[in-house]
Image (cartoon, rainbow, N blue to C red; front, top):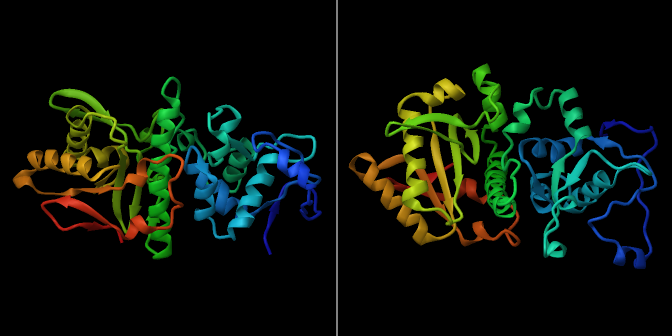
Length: 330
């Protein structure tokens, strides 16, 4: 039996609608169902909690992450978004409410955590209090004029991170999210506007490095860097590599995050691009070898609309290394 939160004691029931109403109703407009919305433990575990760690997740990502039948998760996403009769829902928000895609009819709905859901998670102590939780979400809020482009990058980061988390969960491997890591970090880190923005000095110049995602598997910490092959390797990627090497060698990760080890996963969209980045790392690393960085290239990483649903495969897949055997997260 599932617990319920909010609303009246009566059970939730759905209504079948006439075919003509279903045909012409836009998924961009809310409608009011006939009864109050009750929040179950499954809603919290499968929908609200992952959305507390990601700025937005698509329907297919949440369906893959959840433990319920896909049809049930999809139905609940609709119910939680539409809300109660005569009142707009604050459980979920859809990104296409304030960002209209030119091809919106083919774009999977992107869901964001609503204010009521966030308040419920805090009340039940599922997420800690403090603005740092929202400020450190994977694929954080992007601003114009590059918002659409940045959204594609954020989608890629969330897709890879969720896939790895699903794989770790299926293998019963101890997994810690970036929220878990930050909660154990020094208090001054959580007080920063962007807690995952790590200050570092590289070649005498003050800069910072901010991973696209951060997590831990079996006590080993991983930063994720997603690359859509739009940035200069020498101008952008190499400085990132140097910054990551410095925060580890100088013990900055211990001071800022309270961790004593870190590996970096670079995901990119082509084999050629990956090999070029690895060649640059070979020039930097001692004896042309490095265990710290893992690389994987898949054309699907860059397809914003047709990315396959996460299934845990990246947890078991090989990540190539420079001068060493492949890295397997599991």
